[in-house]
Amino acid sequence: MGVGIKATNSKNLRVENCSFVGFDTAIELENVDGFVSKNNQFSDGKNPRKLLRDLSEAIAKSRYDKSSKERIGREIISALKSKNVAESTKNKIVSSLKYVGDKAVDAFVQLAAAVAAGMIIR
Image (tube, rainbow, N blue to C red):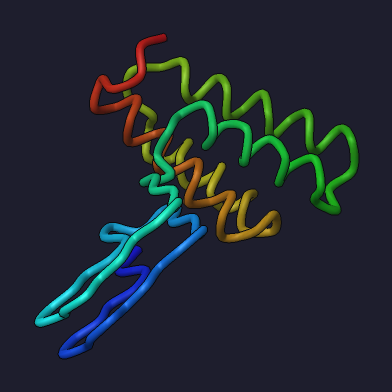
């Protein structure tokens, strides 16, 4: 997702009490003197539990009716239980999630990739 903070040719840069989530690189510095980082949190945002929780919350808050939310949830769980998510299944779920939001789509795609890569064990 890019870089959270990028500084070049700077002095006395101070970053305090910040949370960096989902960035490929949180802080990128080039030719910086006097850099201080204090009380910051860094996370790549790819924790499967967090992704699944974020996805569930996004679906729950969506404008879909209750039965549609339950159907989408069942489809997601069924897809994630399989070792390889079929491309047609993935596309169908992504299409449904587009109405939920980009973050929901991204969370599902990351979860499906993690399952396919064997990073998440059923």
